[in-house]
Image 1 (cartoon, rainbow, N blue to C red):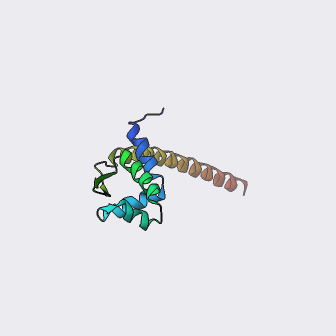
Image 2: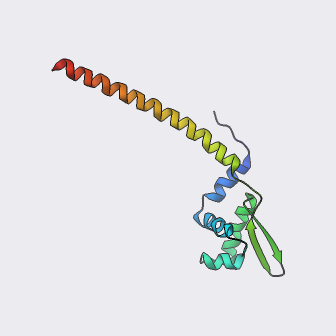
Image 3: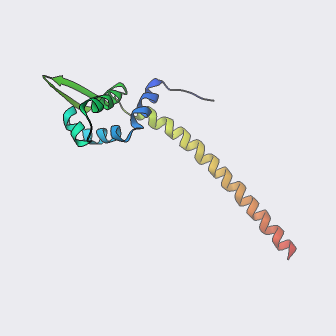
Length: 120
């Protein structure tokens, strides 16, 4: 059964799927930066960095403001709480499945050892 929280989940995961965009977020944790500064730091063209910032803005992770000729970026209002909850559900599911698999393996090993002792 597949359940979608909303499309922001998709937008945020898509934004975070790129190493450059994750790097931009890490840089913005330290404070505001201009598109030019970010482009220079990541050895990119201004156009390329604008595209990355646009993806982050659409996900709500970055906000930017243009004053004169300079566009300044900062962390946006978006949080990752819904995404963390989604991942926690799957973590719990997979943890339970692996524990069940561990029990099956332990039972099989126990039976195998019992059979070996009977044959001795």
